Image 1 (cartoon, helix red, strand yellow):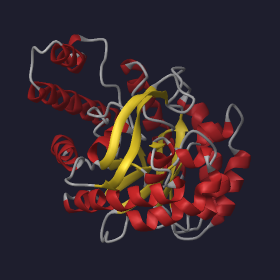
Image 2 (cartoon, rainbow, N blue to C red):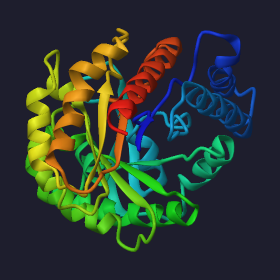
Image 3 (cartoon, helix red, strand yellow):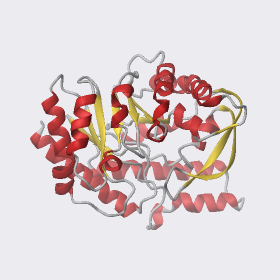
Image 4 (cartoon, rainbow, N blue to C red):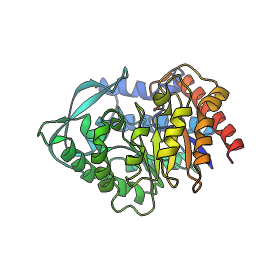
Length: 340
């Protein structure tokens, strides 16, 4: 079965009054007019709305929209011991920013920090499944300031050990699919051996949850055979970044030749970084179809295939985000017809 899902985030605000609940709550909290609990209630309301819009668009697997996340890095660092949060830095080559964590002490995890939000999302999304999302240890290490000069390898492994406890708690909370976001690997391909070691440490003790190792911000297909040695059930690839404005023929050939037959794929076929609305038919014919044909021709057991956005949709206008999901659902529907 070919499934459709957002890669991760969804807009936290929109143009309508009911889509600005969280913005108003944060502004009032900044003025000292409301309590943190009231901000949390606004986050709940926007999470329910994000989930409802994904369901309405026909997504098969939902996310909580990462509505509670101020950015992909500091949100996780705030949940771990050993980090302090510092100033703003640009997030890869985007026009968005994240607060850089400084790894200034022993890295650990004292209590769950993603589990309550996951449980809330599951309740709001029922009966559709929700994937849990965690920023991976390599990305956390590469985007943090290493004040103790541990080096990328040791810092990554320390973060992996701390996040392992969160991953196990997510599984205990019922997470059947846990996505590990590792955009940094496309920028630091020489770190593939570090990531492989970290992934083993990260998932130690899991018994039932499937792992999706998601890459973005570049073409990770040269690393697929290396990534496939990690304990992961699916590998996520930013197809739009890999092929640019070209067609997916060469990409499809590389992917089919490198990925093991039993490993699933999450293919970022709809552009999550551009407000331009692509044609669903053209996206299917130019991008999705050549890849699916190549994977089918490669044979082997039938693998899990997720069609996704290439990036989280948080920074797109909300109406564009809704349209992107409709395009993704249409691409999924055509794919199911040809590759049932």
